[in-house]
Structures are given as structure tokens and as C-alpha cells.
Length: 219
Image (cartoon, rainbow, N blue to C red):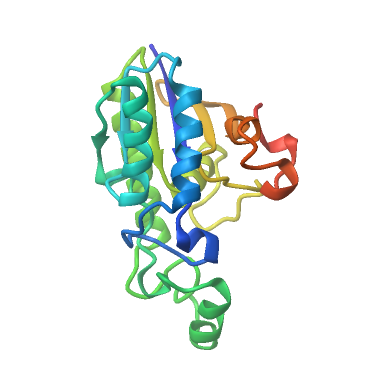
């Protein structure tokens, strides 16, 4: 039996808008993020769904609660779908991280293994285990998961056979965009990637502002 999985990135936060790394910091949605989530909820209101999961972090849980309220569906919180713990990088911009930490980087002490954070290997293992558990628990069903940008990239890296520390040449992780996978046993197929049509239709975003080409949207 196949399982269809809709992976959704949470709505925007003030830290997203400021370019700050969030990790497991419990940053809430901002006004834009709540508007994005409402647009997403309207889009998904008539989609058949058997279950709605979410990371337990506030920005994902609030996004999921808005989606669930529109269809009177409970949200199942699962910490396995949390963002990667980025340790001391949390709250910093990329420029601040480079300024504070890059001079001392050697070998494993790098982007892949943030100080006091989750290693890339541990993160990939957690994400793939969460995905396998979801598929095993919902044979023949369609489920949605509200999660995080890092989780989405990790799933895609797994799908395309990339190592946890290998770069993934896919642009864009728009807030509240959705990507769709079909799982048949151990086989994964990508059906849709970074689809944010609900934001375009609501006038909240355009392709140029998103910084992604149509080539990485619905497949």
C-alpha cells in the first residue's frame, strides 16, 4: 500500500524575516506567518486527509492548528519532526555565525556540527526514522506534517541519495509551501516540491519575491 505525505513548512516568524537561525528555539508566528497559514488552511480545507501531524515547536504547531481548525481535524504533535538543534547558532544570522565561529573551525567543528547542537548524522537519522514511522503507521492513507525547512532538506537529501553533509542543489523553502511524497514500502517518489500557489493566489508572494523558479515548484 502506498502512503502519500504532504510536508509543509511552518509560517513565517520574526526570526525568519530577520534571517536568524531558529533551531529548536520556540519562536512564534508573526502576523505574516498567521496570514500565510490561513491561506494554506483555505487551500487544504477540501483536500482528503487522514491525519495531521506537526512538530511540537510553536511556529509549526500554530500553523498546524490553523490548518486543523479549518477542517475540524485534531493536530498530533510529534517532537520527532522538530527542526535541527543548531546549538549556539540559534538566534544568529549567517554573518554573525561566520564572524563568531568560523575562525576556530577545524574538521568536524563546522556548519555540519554546530557547537552544542545536533550533528548532521544524528539529525538525518532522526528525520528518516520519523518518516519511516509515519509510513508504517498510515498504510494506504494521506497524511500532512507541518515541520521545518531543515527537516524538508533532510528528507529530500535522503530521497536523492545525498549524504547528511552534502549540499542539495534545490532552491527555496518558502514558508507554508508544501511538498508531496508518495511512499511504497522503502521506495519514495517526489510528486510536488515547494508549492506555494496559495500564497500567489492570495497576493502574499510572487515568484520573484520567493527567490525560486517555477522549475522547483510543482513537479
